[in-house]
Image (cartoon, rainbow, N blue to C red; front, side, top):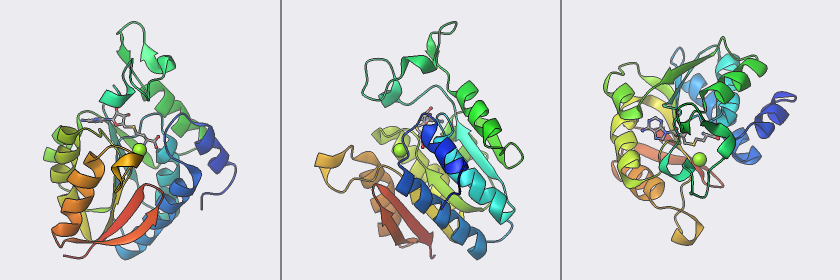
Length: 211
Ligand code: SAH
Ligand code: MG
């Protein structure tokens, strides 16, 4: 569990990570770092840095780093007119979302600038040029079918053997939420035989790479 006062800072940061799921993410990342020493963590989808505080603290504790990948322009579901839109994160000069200043402030306030490396860009593009095996990969980027498939294809191969894949917003029951994280990331990972389910906390699933 993330210690105070950082836990309160995380919970007061704009974002979509509930406290119990953040704590589960933190614990899973610490276990993954034990299983796969000297390997970095990767987060896909940081938004304003809320989940990043949990993972960045785990990286600091484990003596590793977290690469936080986001184009900071928001997912489809974050855009004006959609359910998860917040007008405060729109850059009026550009007329588009820009969560990077919020993210940067949160990581500064958390004292995590030495352990969190922002990678600002398109997740599939970053994945295509990525080659370092990761102890922990957390996928919480775009939740449409195409972004979910791209993140699944692009990032699951980079989880080291014995490392952990975490997926957010996994809803087996369609009544609870959107399908792609479940249909296009979680199920293919399990069905591939490369991952086995480790923990379930709310909509967070952690899977250990076994093959
Ligand atoms: N993990 C965050 C929430 C992430 S919201 C929290 O706990 O609060 C999803 C994020 O994914 C958004 O910030 C959006 O900009 C980013 N995103 C969506 N599609 C992306 C893509 N193709 N490449 C990079 N980032 C993407
Ligand atoms: Mg999420």
